[in-house]
Length: 391
Image (cartoon, rainbow, N blue to C red; front, side, top):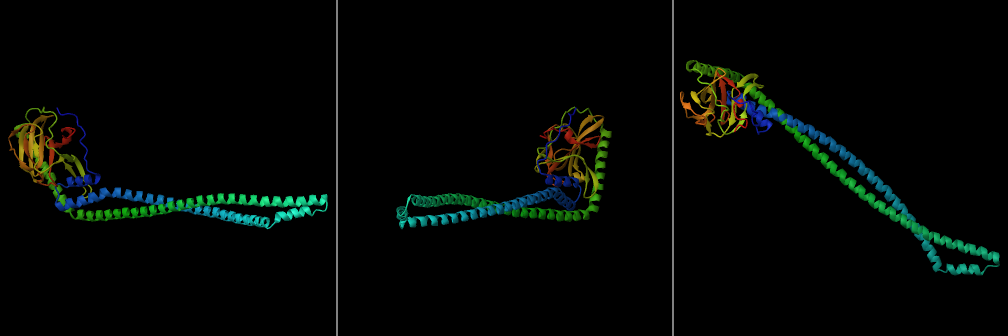
C-alpha cells in the first residue's frame, strides 16, 4: 500500500516569484494577456509589503540619525563653550604672569642699579640702636617683598601652564565633538535620501499594481469563460475514466508501493483548490507541477495500462496510465503538457519506462510536467504518493 504522506521539498524561489507562479498556475487555462496581467499584479502585490517595510525602517533610521545629529550638535556646542571658558582662564592666567614678570623685572633693575648698596647705606646711617632695628625691619620687609614677587611669578607661570594644557585638551574635545556632529548630520542626510528612495519604490509599486489590476479587469469575461471550459474539460476527464473502468474493470489490486518520481525537476506548483483574487473564481489545480527542461524524459510512475494518450485541450499532450484497484477505485496517474508521447492507448508500460518528453503544450506557461493521481477519475494530491524528497 502507499506510504504515509511526506512533506514536499521547499520551493527555492523568493516570495515574489512564488506569487507569480501561483498566479500563472491559477491561470493555466487563461489567455496570454490575462496571465501577463495577473502575473504583474501578483508581482507588485507580493513586493509591496517588503517595500513598505523598507519605508518604515528607513523612516525610523531617519528619526534616529536626526536625534543623534542633534545630540552631537549640542555636545559640540557644549564642548566649544567649555573650551572658550578654559581659554578665557588661560588668557587671565597669562595676564597674571605678565604682571608678575613686570614686577620681578623692576626688582631686578633696582638691584642692578644699586638698591643693595642703598640698603647698606640705610643701615649705616642709623643714629642709634632703636633706629638700627627699625631700619633692619624695613630692609627685611623689602627683601620679603622681593621674594614674594618671585614666588608670585612662579605660581602664575604654573597656573598658566595648567590653564594652557586644559585649553588644549578642551580644544581637541571641541574639535572631535564638531567632527562627530558633522558625521551624524551626513548620516541623517543619507538616511533621508534612502527613505525618499524607498517611498518612491512604494509609489511605483502602487502605480504598477493599479495598472495591472486595470489590465486584469479587462480580461475578466474571457477568463471566466475559459474557467468554465476548464471545469467542463475536467468533468470530461473524470467521465472518460469512469467509462473506461466500467467497460474494462479496475483490474487487480494495486500493490506497487510509493510511486516513482516521473521527472527530474523541482516542484513549481502544488495541488489544490485555489481562489483567484483577481478574477474572483475558484479553480482546482488537479495535480502538482514539476519544472524541468524541455525534452526531459517522463517516466511511468508505476506499471500499468495506458488508457489515454493524445491531445486533451488545456492539458496539451496528455497520457493517463491505470495501475489497478485501490479502495474500490481505479488508481490512475496522468502526465500533461508533453512535447512528445511515446505510448498508445491499450499499451502496457512498466515502472520507470519513458513514456514521453517534457513540453509546454496546451495551456502552459513554460516547460514543465503537470502530474496527477486520480481515483475513479477524481484527482487527489500526488505529493502524498511520491517520494518525500521528490527525487
